[in-house]
Length: 213
Image (cartoon, rainbow, N blue to C red):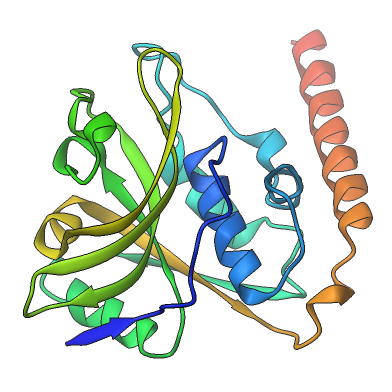
């Protein structure tokens, strides 16, 4: 099985692996957004961070949030999938042959396509976009807009990886498709307003509950 979305590309280095992946897929679909706007539209203000070895472990929760609680639901549909490793390759192929990039959630310790990831010994998750596969050649085509080393240097990667390695590392994936043809109808300002209102309301409720224990 071979299917590659040759037109897919990343828009420079991101600032978060999940939101930069979503950002680049939305750009590919025709939406004119920056990553910060994606962060707001997908309720990034409600992201939970876990202080375990100074690392972030909320990606699975965030993926559910992306599907269920984003502010672009009238413009896009998000489909989250668990990863059955025996069927994963065919699942990838079915999406890719329709021109749909796959956003993969992967275990870092199983990834070796970049030295920054290969050097990470922590049991954490990472997100990147799969835009092609070649089964016979054991190739996966990956677009990764956000990696950061121990010195705080940012890196991006677009290129080939082992398909078997990517399948082994993948714990789940999701895809994004347009509901509308005219992507310019998306109101960025409205999404900012809704995100801030939702964040403010949830925090007011939390503070009220904390003060009335």
